[in-house]
Image 1 (spheres, helix red, strand yellow):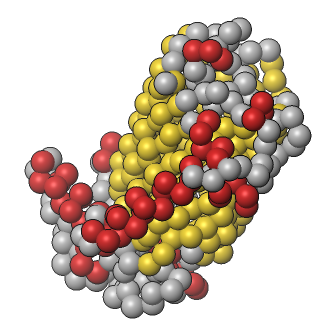
Image 2 (cartoon, rainbow, N blue to C red; image 1 turned 120 degrees about the vertical axis):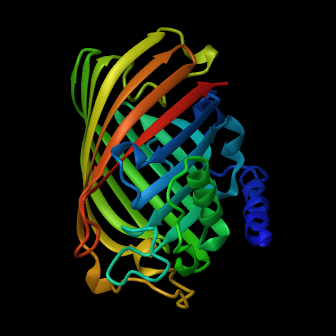
Length: 324
C-alpha cells in the first residue's frame, strides 16, 4: 500500500486545530470529550459480499472549535450547543463471489475508501444540525486487500481473489449536512425524530429523509451526543437501556464504490450510471446500554438493492463509546 496516501491524510488532519474559529461563541461550545469506535461486518448474517466490513473512529473535543474548516460549516441557530469532532471512516465492498480471480461483469466492483470527516454539530431545543467536510481517498491505498485477506486467513475463510480489479485510487472530497427535528415525545420513554440528509461529493451524492424512533430508559436525544463528560452529567440518567429503529429513503446521484472515482477513470471495472438504483432504502435497529461515561451499541442494518440485478443486504455493527 503506497505510504504517501496515509501520510497525506495524517498531515491534513492537524489542520483541523491550528486556526482560530469564525463560528460559535466559546460559551456555546460543549465541554464534552468523547471517543467512539464502531466495527461492522456482514459475516454475522452468513454472507460475505457487497458491504463486507467497515470501521469508524470518532473523537469529539472542544479544541476542534478552532478548525479552519468551521468557516465553511453550517453554524446552526443562535444559542445552540456546539460539538466539534473528527471521524475516520473505513469501508470495504466486494462482489457476490470473492473466490473468483476474474472480473464478475454485472456484479459490484471491489472498492474501499478511507476518509476523515471534520464536522460540527449544533443542538438547539429539540433540533440538531450537523455539517461536515469529508477528505480522503478511495482505492488500493485504503488497504482493504491486505485487511480482508488477513482476516480471512485468521478465520480460515475463503481467500478474496479479486482485489486487483478494485476501483483505483482517487480523491474523496465531499460535504454533508443533516437536520434532525423532534416530532413527538412521551416523557423520557419514547421519542420520534424526523431526519433529512444530503451529501455532495466525489464519493457519494444523494439526498435522503427518514425517521428515528427511540424507546426505553434514556436521556433525551437532544441533551447530548449519547454520553456526556462528568462535568455535564448533572441531572442526567446515569443508567440507560433503550432500543432504536431508524428508516431512511435516499435518492442517489453518484456512488463512487459502484461507478469509480470522479477524476481517475482508469479503474479496470465499474458499473455505468444506468445500472444504479436511484431510490434506495435502509433500515437500522439498535440496542444501547450505557452507564455514566460508557456506552455499548449493537445494531443490525438492512439495505435494498443498490444496482440493477443485485440483492438486498444486511450486516451487524458494534459500537463502544466513552466520555473522557
